[in-house]
Length: 128
Image 1 (tube, rainbow, N blue to C red):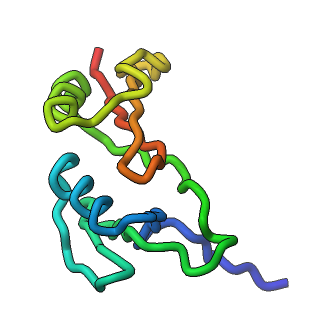
Image 2 (cartoon, rainbow, N blue to C red; image 1 turned 30 degrees about the vertical axis):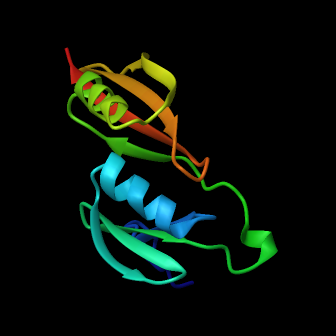
């Protein structure tokens, strides 16, 4: 019996549904400060997430019209990130909170919704 070492590991792109592409593109670019790579009007916009593409797109079919999975963005300073995003008008659903003691660091998170009502989160590994 042959063994196959194949396994998925690296994410190349994440798709997030949008109902108003212009509004969603402006939110991710202007409020979250993400780098817009390119747009394919009127259906898609692509952003860079440190080497992973984030695609905002209108749902192609009714069965694809649902909220996205939660995307967790790593930040070095959670308090600063939350304060900056609030200054840009981002409304947080969950303020920064301690989640778990990971041994050498504490895991902290905060969550918010984008302009299309998708839940997003920030996470930070705070050294002890």
